[in-house]
Image (cartoon, rainbow, N blue to C red):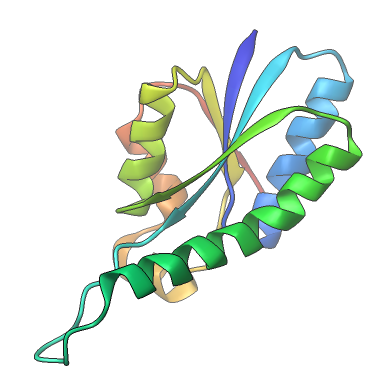
Length: 141
């Protein structure tokens, strides 16, 4: 069985990528789907008062669940089984590490995500993933 990693960030392109995978499975692809949301590491800037790390993590978990909810609803509607997971870390490397750790055969993701400003500064997450992994990556507009 083919194992597909679907990084989800709430963008329209991520939704299109998910629909692409659902269509592929409807056309006969046997696949296990991993739905992943990666929350970035949040570090305090300068000498701000101590921030409660647990509070930050709870907020990130809540945000991740919110972003995964619509993706999982699409998979539920298509009557497909999936594994959902949340990670906190550098987005591109965390996606690649997850794929390797869970023996995913491919990654299907949107070509552009929610972080337009970050994409200008750091290069797109999709571009970073393509260069960091040795498994096939399908980018969907």
